[in-house]
Length: 299
Length: 241
Image 1 (cartoon, rainbow over the protein chains, first blue to last red):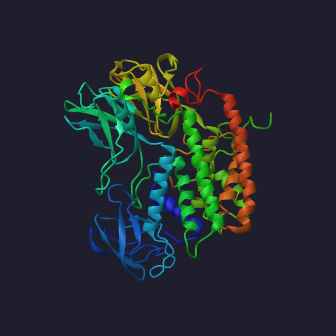
Image 2: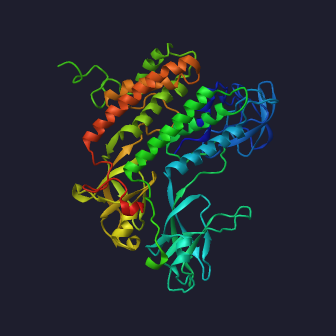
Image 3: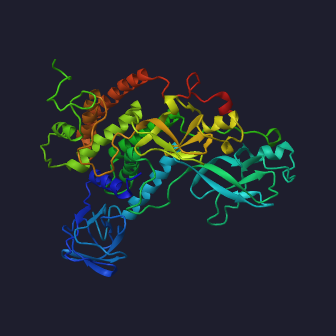
């Protein structure tokens, strides 16, 4: 995947008729790292104090910089890396109304994009991963991976543990502490989510009697927040769908830019094209399939 | 013979006329009553991108383009999960030695077929299964790398943005008018109002055309998108219970 967040936001900028920064740096000598480094771009379009811009033409020195101040044809920013004259400077900055009454902020738009990406991944389950989880003697419950939508399969030394439910375990009459060997797993219905940052948990039947390692097979969600130069997790040909999800939020927001016609169209496009992906995945059987519930007694 | 058989027409790989994305840009601009370079639209970021977007939508609806790789892929040893090749969205088929097709299954079915399958090893794979869009699994786990040929639904444009216009169009000519319809529609979104409303007809033409072309894709191979030959493609009652 190579599409970055800024590219989708630039696409949105065109539809929203918002200016954005897409220029090169005209400094004549290498600049940075340092604080309040003066940068002279070829164009100041879309640049304002507080704007986030992507600076750099190579994977080594590319960074997101925050515009500290603007003076004429130059601005200052704190740089972590050294940069060369002629490097690319770009960013979807949504300058309308800045600095006192912005219609949209960059952080707001990035939040929309992060939400839409996660919504898309939730609806399609198109990204899957595995991770090895250490289990310890006497501990039944373990946290899900932080990037997991849900666990689809758990295996121990290559052997699948049967998926079941807490209620089935309770009704089965199985002695869950017997220690006859792991055979199933279930989502914990009573996780301690009152503690901030606590992740959902799953439980094992029966109680582990030795330290070991299980493998979790799960569907992934994206990041909670995005930076301008973050690569999106969605495959490149499908990233256009995220644009419509973002625009649906943009045009349905209360305020001067409210546009019910565009909002309705973009939401319908997002829903329809997401459905296309769901159908496509179903045809490819790229989903992990539904997991049936089984009682622990029959596992 | 005239028509599509000879040279001098800038023929595409399927004998059609449009072979690069840039060749459709002027047609989209015509629909928008714009010259080249355009005034109210950006050629690279809006017009060109809309043509590529049209191809991506067409891929989802029709399951094309389908590519049988010329070069072999080496499956990594000692691991079940393998990375999808660059530019591949969904794997359709794996050919092992002597062109023999490897049986396709699912992760769910592997557990039913052979409990403990993850730890089994061998020198040639017998089964493969999809695992999302970015990986696929094989069984048994290989003791050494194996050369296979992959067939897959490919990214319509394999190179990342920004697009140059030189990207080849690897769809048949019948698709291209649909791409122009789509481009002329989405580029009017920013206008809104009646102009955009009237472009819905072009979008519907695109959908109708892709629907028709998806029937041809079905004719090419109705079982392409199903499990191994003879198996039902729908979720069975056991699986859904």
